[in-house]
Structure formats: C-alpha cells, structure tokens
Length: 155
Image: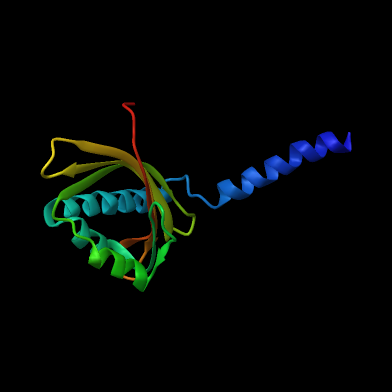
C-alpha cells in the first residue's frame, strides 16, 4: 500500500511544483503576449535589417547561443560570434507557435518554425527553434538562450 501511495503522490507533487512556476491565469496574458510580440519583432528586424543586426539587438548581455557542432557561445563570446557572421547570402525569418512565462513574469520561452532563404539559390531551409527570454529592467524582452534544429517536414 505504501508503494502505491508513493507512486501516486510523488508525481502529483512534482506536477504541482512545475505548474506552480508557470503562470496560467489572466495575469500572465500580457507578459506572454509581450514576449511573443518581441519574438515576432525580432524576426521582422531580421527580415528588414539582417540576421546579424537582429541578433545583436535582441541578445541579453549574458545570452547563450547553441549551434551545431560547437560548444555554447556565452555572453561576449556569443556577441562576438554574431558580429563575425556574414549574413549577406541569406535571410531568416521565424514565427513563434507557442510559449509560456514564469509566475514572476520575468522569464519565459517561445518555440516555433524558421525559414532560411538563400539569396543565390532557389531553396528554402525549414527548421524549428526555441528561445528562452528574460524581461529586462526597462521592460523589454531579450533572449538569454537561442537554439534551432535544421530540417522540418511538412506538418
């Protein structure tokens, strides 16, 4: 009987702890909407001024970039990595498909689909991404972690 109680109560406890840290009421609607709009504005800036300009604008000073076949780039190294990038041969846009905001309203994540278009080729690469966002002291959202996965079949 103790084992049954243990296997029922422990998962309930962990689920309740996790759910307690994510806002799911109307108070979080504005925070989540603002964060998702920041992600959309990030994509729009990438489309208008280039990937490099957008990433420099939206990365937190301690931001982390996770890229294939590489150790994570953190803080100044991440900004340096972005600065060295040559984005003249492609453009990238994305669309958030969802996300959540912490109960405190200062940390959240978005996920979605990106399109990478090469300027000299007639091809488009699709993939998925996730970004972790932090609300800054001035109320703006900046990403603290960015990662993506290449390849996406048609949904």
